[in-house]
Length: 356
Image 1 (cartoon, rainbow, N blue to C red):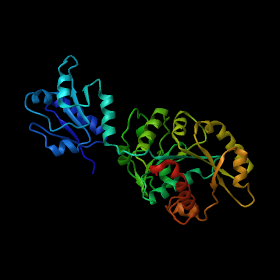
Image 2: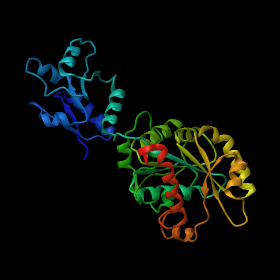
Image 3: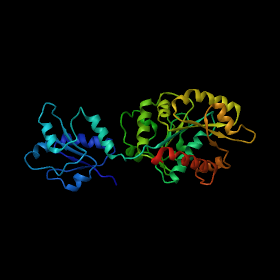
Image 4: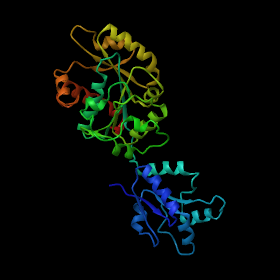
């Protein structure tokens, strides 16, 4: 269990502000009133917020528990130059004044509670034409990753797609959908995002609902994906073929883009338009060939589109019936989609170290 942010202040207004900022970042907090702080509390806390009122009261009363990183002195009086001397005595990493420094402090609190490590491998899936199976592959990648014990986030990037929560059998699952994040700006805690989202088949899912589609600003997509990536593991984004501001932000954050294309000339024509718009925004865009008897082979599809081939994906028998029974794509570990997804994740692992 994560340690709590440690708050030391007797100033009720300042305390209210610090508790509000911790809550917004999804951080647990522990307030120590009055007496001395236990050395263990001081050392274990990911961040220590000391009100200037406590620093003033501490003057001449001996040393603080010990020098350590992550100690911030927080005051309100911009015209008081003596706060800097108290910051030096405290060994503060930074001296802040509220309300002006609130945005910086909110970011610092979120940084303190987010898990360190490699960012998540982020994979985007786009259909070369409607009905290509992009959403099924996105779900299968997420379900397979979660079954392997990896932290996994699935993001529905298509407001007109009907909602991935239905595909995962969780349309009634409690938790926020995209409309709750359309106003997201700046820094969002990755751990807070994880804890708030519906969890289905081991996957943290951010889906659209069935309400009238709200326009998703690019900044909101950037904020949410940045938070999702910060926690490591795998992030899968199901994307539409039309590129708007939000889709452009998502494409720019992808480590790998998968363009799902059936083996037919009409699908190639549609996929070429996707390549012309989205291709320039993705650092690594590859073809997933949906092969059928008598259709174009994967190598030929890749040649026609000028892209590398990620693999050939035949149809999975019984997929529609399983979906109707509430089993999302990728549930059958021996099925075509699950095996394809496992191989793709394994191949991506060396390029990103411990990201997956």
